Image 1 (cartoon, rainbow, N blue to C red):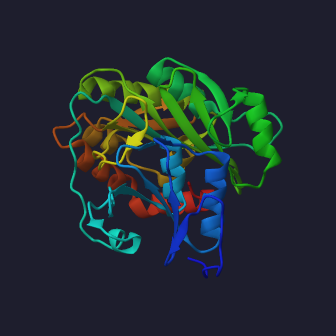
Image 2: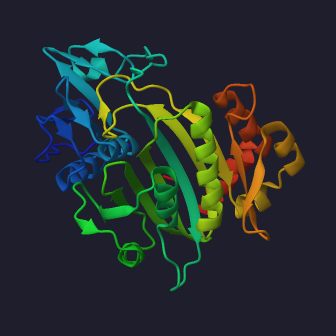
Length: 341
């Protein structure tokens, strides 16, 4: 963390508690408005940790929660004179005490009436030329996982620009070398994405993370849907590097409440052509041990694997798959590519 800026103020920051810049959100739904985005940037730039404090029953949009997290911030729930940290379960009478606890909340089971959501993360690399169009991961996954399409985009919530892939690409190019972050959503409330675009040594990297409402189906069926979606992504995306799809039970509106979240369960992963060449994995071993298949372009295939194909738990299977590829090699490849946000 940088040196704390003495005398820091911001219109959204209600008080400073040590190194914590506290934003008392007096609304029932916290979203990433332009003012909130500016507050997160300003507080971190001042060497402070942003803390959003909400009412007990307030919810936070996926996009606000994501950007708060990548800013190194925290979310506290105010209940009377006490503050609760949903991440650790600690309840205390001050911000510092509430955030200093080491008690970690164990895996939480949401109500079975809560729907499943897909959590996706994709890194793609495209040539830095005039013909490149960004957004292929969003287009592919939205269609294949929810049957919808992007409808709006922008830098904040609410997103007021009608989706236009050319305009999205040109706006991203205007901010190069970046990074620049955008938000994209469909029209039905079933898909929300945030992207980070930057120029790297390998071209233009677009990192996409998102949350999508999953259909009501068994875990096995959702795994099949995830594998099919990544198989399609291998053909749809110009240059996928890595991609993962997980599932997590939660709210149907894709927001988060102040309760501990349930653990995400990995469903499927994709290793793109460039990563496959760099990692040089034993394809026969991956097929035999994990049921991995090749997908996409015949001359430059990707590897796609579903983590429900073995009797082991999806989490342990995902860990073993990563180890089989080479954990250190993956880290080095991401580092050479410019990393993912």
